[in-house]
Image (cartoon, rainbow, N blue to C red; front, top):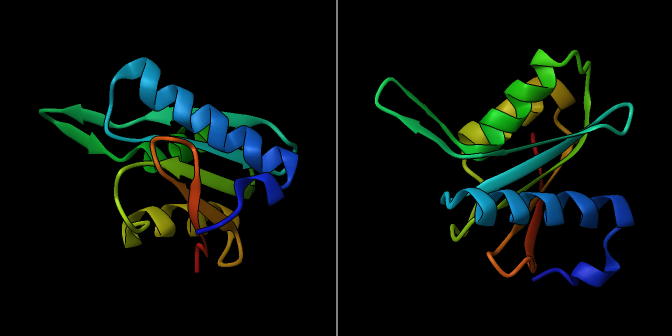
Length: 117
């Protein structure tokens, strides 16, 4: 467990954005990433017959499509207990191995902070 109140305000912001995306879209996961300029990209799970992306993969794709060159941090809100290897790889591809990935539950409480590496 991580004390969410001890998080940097910008990290709290991406957790809140990820939580909002999950709730607003009624999807299993919500995610948000912050790029090197401080811009944020928010997404939910994509589940189409021909395309399946986690919320975090979608947020990273949105950042790349918008011209982001790197990531400072990422957050995912989910009922899962761990950040998948595929999600960490997507963050690592753009942000590098040391990029922090925050995992929060549906209530917004951060359960873990892991590196993308």
